Figure 1 (cartoon, one colour):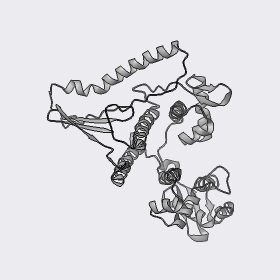
Figure 2: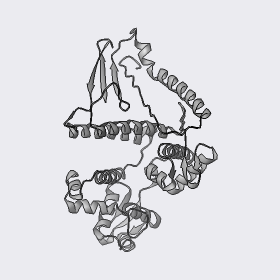
Figure 3: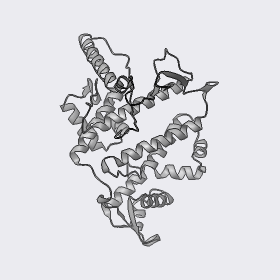
Figure 4: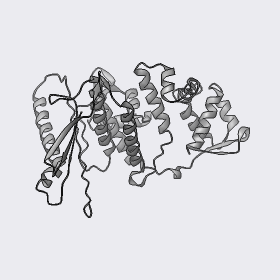
Length: 352
């Protein structure tokens, strides 16, 4: 990846390899991980509070743990190594993964999800009744889940020990989203999943989007009716799409556009890291960041600040020409080019 910084009235630029490697291995990986995590938490916090909402994030740490543990296993690491990377004993790691694994008492749900749903349906419910319902799961795992639900704010607990009673936090504790707006957002997220991962089935869409099955089914039906996705011939339960359009300025569905851009950036960086080499002008995968320092009335200000709008227009025109050419030809598509770019203009001027 190449990083450039333009200084001295935006006339000079320097390029620095942002993936410096030694013997094919990334240097200062720990520093990079810390920086990426910090920026990601800022991003998540901004999303969780955008528009005055207070989106529940209590389960986020659990999901991050599960996903990261799974990816580390996919990289070939043993459980004892993964536990050490999390700063846990192997026994603690096993208990944590058990809490978030499939429940033995409720098929298709993690213990955490199953206990939360049971409390929601039966509230107020005594702890003894919860223990009886989930007797097939390990007792200390259920205890850990209940403590986590209370500490995270998902549930309230009255009393202690054998006399504890649990109930769900009120809906008013979490700002909601209108059902119609949520359905639109779901449809765009499902569309993005089909476009990027198709041909894909319902279970695959659920895995990618983390939406409930009912929400995925409803979104797929809507997308089929609008001809935004198609069923794969000969495979009625698999879907594909040759386009993804989230128009600029759209009030709903922007979530898919944000995620698509984020996914494109991360995918490119991961691909670059896996190649085990530096950057060059001939790269087909990579990115660049340029910073331009300006003053009010700078002769290049209009040209540089207009970069986002200009590139959008150029790429939209290119996509239109590409669609016309592809429509006239029956050749099989065997490659996909994903182009991402962005722009942030920060000014200390009044009203900037």
